Image 1 (cartoon, helix red, strand yellow):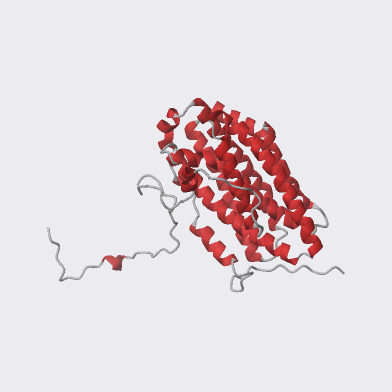
Image 2 (cartoon, rainbow, N blue to C red):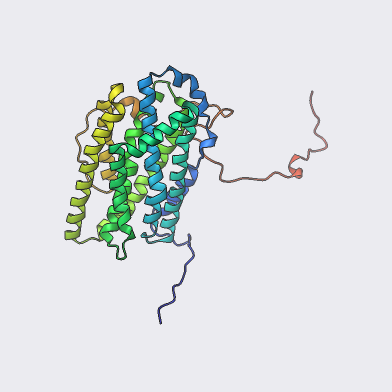
Length: 334
């Protein structure tokens, strides 16, 4: 007789590790949805951009949409099945939901700046661009290995590492242009959405990186050498492809050099999230873009849109009639 499977309930009173609850709370603090923002304020700014800059912007967001779609529909769901700890799974599930919100958010921006025909064209471009498709195929191949009957711990590690590469490395060539434009006062309202996405991806990369480090620490020295070799081979393939992708997206607007420097900068961050030393030599990263990563400084007003440092209220106190009862001795001064 086969053993009866016992289903367990998640018990948050006994932590899976010393960081999972912190990431749960941070994710909650950062919760947002795209309809809280008003990218239509960028219409005049959009019209002021050159045709080449508009095209680069649409391609950057089109590529981001495809990668976030992959992460929400394939990456996170498959990883969740192979991670121990129900609290860890809960955090990953929340992140999966946010990836779907990210993917939708780009469409919210597109609906402001592009016609229906232009939107259709950019999604067709995303489904046929050679470099973008290679990115997705490469990451997806490591996720799909988790479908095997006997999944090895090395397979799980490489899936986690691929997730970190996506969230801390590959997304950022797309983030560059919105951050760069907003730093010069252009497309600022749309970039408020981008900054929220960047803030999410930053903690996603760190959390998944910590999970990957736990797997790596349990490997034998032989296993460590093997997966490290595979990881660096993966990174080199993605890096070379990312350089070509940058030439395609940014070649007509003269930003390829700055974007490639930014790619190397974020490649090193991805490695650090996985517990490794940086591999790329990095010169001066565009200061406008680096400053754009500071999500605490956006100017805003509470009647038009939420700022990027908006925090959703987590504790609500309900008012009752008694709260408005006035002492009889009080008088109203007119």
